[in-house]
Amino acid sequence: MTPVLHTALGLLTIGVILLVLAFPLSTWLHRVFTDERHWRIERTIYRVVGVNPDTGQRWSVYALSVLAFGVISVAALWLLILVQGWLPWSFGRAQTWHGALNTAISFTTNTNWQSYGGEAGAGHTVQMLGLTVQNFVSAATGLAVAIALVRGLARAGGQRIGNFWVDLTRASVRVLLPIAVIGATLLILGGVIQNLAGPRTVTTVTGADQIVHGGPVASQEAIKLLGTNGGGFFNANSAHPFENPNPWTNLLQIILVLIIPFALTRTYGLMVGDRRQGRLVATVMAALFSVAALLTAWSEAAAAALPTGSMEGKEQRFGLAWSVLFGTATTGTSTGAVNSMHESYSPLGGGLLMLNMLLGEVSPGGVGTGLYGMLVLVVITVFVAGLMVGRTPELLGKAIGRREITYAALASIVMPTLVLAGTASALLIPVA
Image (cartoon, rainbow, N blue to C red):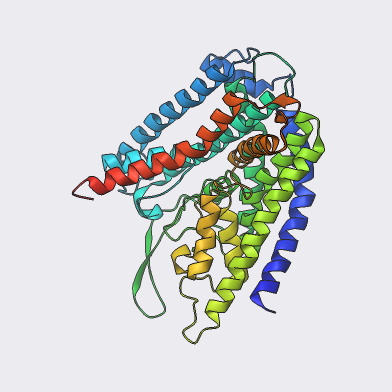
């Protein structure tokens, strides 16, 4: 079987599983964010943080709530990492103040880029109370923002788009937590480790000494993928056999990455009262994902057929196709997880993975971020199409004017502008 055909069959397998799981999940997401009742545990959380769950927020207040929560999260995680030497299960691991700040910002913003080796820079307490918690709430924040945008598109009047603290709590308690528990249990059954063991030295078959690390890996792995976070418990990430031991766990991890972004498309259709809109968004996302995967597989197969071969950095346990599918799933969803090294791909294959990132991760994008990223593109497309045919651009019965297209344009250019400005500034620093 050729790698391209193998990849196509893998896409079909993933597609069938997603269709079966995403349908009930999309219905549940719609129910969660339209339910007028609060669960008892949610009311307890609201009382503790001093939030009135029945008070709606204007978009500006909602946005300030998101920013305030982000700032508090960065500060709390930064402090936790700095003091981890005094915490249990630290095993003498530590980070510099600027390394800890980098980690705190990275995990709070769902970036999960690590400037340290996973098993060397964070003890079990930081992994559980810091990084895992941020994997939940950063993904819940993205989901809340997407739902708020959909409410704004769906509303017939009024200025309220919901309550951020309610959306954040419901996304964590009703959506991410139960699915992550199921995912972690399945990963443990598949061979992913879950313990509080520290590093120990073992003697290999060749007589050499090697340090073997333990830890609460399955619980971290489940939410890092479900929340499209990324970041590995181990430095080798999902190429490590303790994180991703066999083809079944590899497939499960791909499904965890893709399930919520694709389910949200139908949730969008349900909330705006037009399921065709949701199907259209899902079709575009699926097309981008499939084409990228097939082209990457074709490129890698051609490179592997060369006399020199091209399997360095590829995952031998899963084969070329499932390395490509994993890479396409994570780069298409802003997930910083890998089961093969992207810099080891061929020029075209690596370029396609980079293209997934440059698209803004809308194929299908991260939890929440993929949907609102695609909706921004829809607004721009409808506006341009309306100008071309000489009609007032409308989306869901709402006119798209200068204000709306300005905000959509800013959403498209602010992030790359910040990236380029930050890169340019770093290059001007002599030590860099």
